[in-house]
View 1 (tube, rainbow, N blue to C red):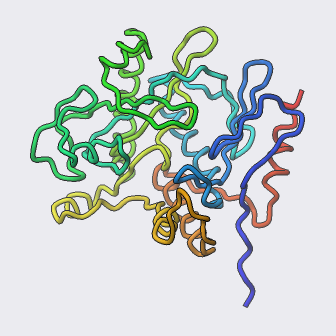
View 2: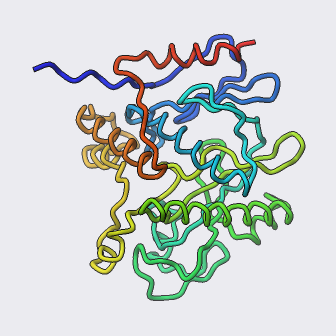
Length: 320
């Protein structure tokens, strides 16, 4: 039997001669002299403060999902996007990222130390400047949509919960900036919920990053409503699973994370070889997420395509 062709994968890319290179966990970034930034989304999967694997199509899915949402929300908040020269690449305005990340939540959910479910399960009721009532259950809809901002750790530190009073008291944002980003975040989330509902999805929570352009305007940065920055649930099964005390159906991309953490301490031990079928399964989840979220067919690169060579060709005009 002939094996199916391997899916092209983008683990990393270098652009010789391009200035201002910064390699993030997932993206390769280049700062051009004219104030533009090139952001290349690779297929790297980051967890436990390290890279676990490369998931075919992941970078393209994130770039194109964010493109869909940037275009659907441009009337609410201006964003950093200038153009898309390649399926994995966005060229945007270089921004000074604001030191506060805005997380918007409609449900008592999450697994991180800063999530409302984690804090609530530890007995906290006052968090992020909001008081939650007693008696809420995991994954229950909150009485109101809430903002749960965190500090933006730029140097590998951990994000910390913030209240509006702390944001203003520490001078992280001015009163006018806080008013603008909080209003934009709530409006963006509302638009996201409405459009997700049309696709049979619940947008449970998401995060936004904002930055200042050279003129001092606040622009939406990074990505928006992607499977990596947002929690989506399937709406047709939510009520039944919630009443049964079960986790809502979602785009479960955590196969690799769960597999690794079940076999070692991923923060200190060597990462074991991850089965190829698990990598492919996770790739399928990302493609399914893109198609369900946007309603568009995913256009994968041809089998065997050299994605690095393709990106270099598509970015050649920016070299000067």
